[in-house]
Length: 152
Length: 256
Image (cartoon, rainbow over all chains, first blue to last red; front, side, top):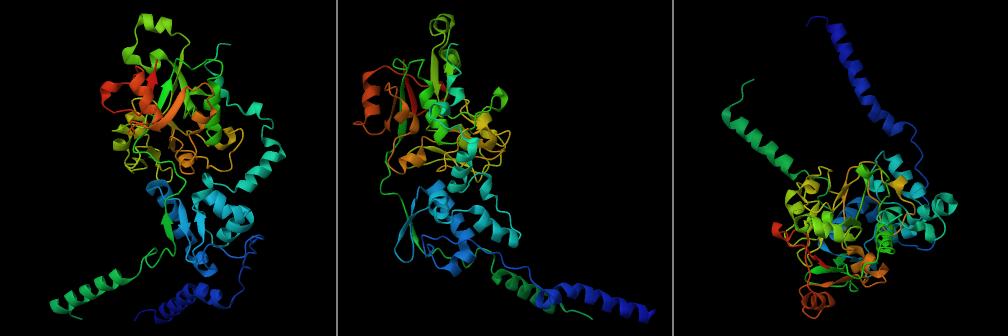
């Protein structure tokens, strides 16, 4: 073999560099697991913690298709308790804060589900509304487009 | 190294088999509970709306629109090109262009018709949609939108002969005055339209516009049930539908 010394040491360096992330993952320091804000009023989620941790995205996927496309509305959990299949009222009704529950874990895992483009946590919306972005009195909530047709 | 034909084929077969049995992402997921329809839901074979324009007054016509748009987080965008509308008003000549002529147009000048998605019996938008984001519910005739699937191609807007669909050219959220926390907003790049308040029927409530109208202009009910209020109205009073010759079979009827 030509240049045996260079070739073999090159292979060894490459192998070491390629293997380093695995090694570092095993022995190096970890980013601290995010602290999630758990609901205070409920002790138990609709299914076991393990199941929800692994499968909540699949469960929600099944739910959304069932609600939007198949006209289903009620989820009867394995313990017999019934829940409305509604992200806003059921999920976010307990997990009040998207920032301190969903987002912390999603950030840690580097996933960015597009749920929040349209959905939101009701309590967070209520908070911003009372902080001043809302319109306040009932009268001013009349949609301006509604007045378009009126003679001025 | 030589590989006999026999050995090669064996290797191909084994590796194909190995790939086939490696579980995919959603394989192995099992829904633990059961799903069922809402017991409180209002049911009909074919939902329909009767708009009695003889009762519609100009000075309050905005209440139903305001109620609808508030409940569904419909943005108010001042530029007409970017407008989003579920329930809206147009003069007679725009609502019934095929039945309009000079005299009618003059007589009904300023007479604004309440327009919305017609929830057609044979909806052209559904046929145009490449992702089945818009579809007709066979059990009650409501033409629904699944915003999760909408890719924003706007074929449905081109297909709809009634202009009932709006596109979100920009993020609608800054244009919503007061967000209803019970209902999602939409995002930039999806089409939206009236859904006959499917989410309210689900919990046993009438559509928001019907509840908001105090003049009894809007009547909502089952067109297939001869005993329903809509059927009674339609059998008693002369009425019309928008562009009936197109054969789309609108579920929204107008009493003039």
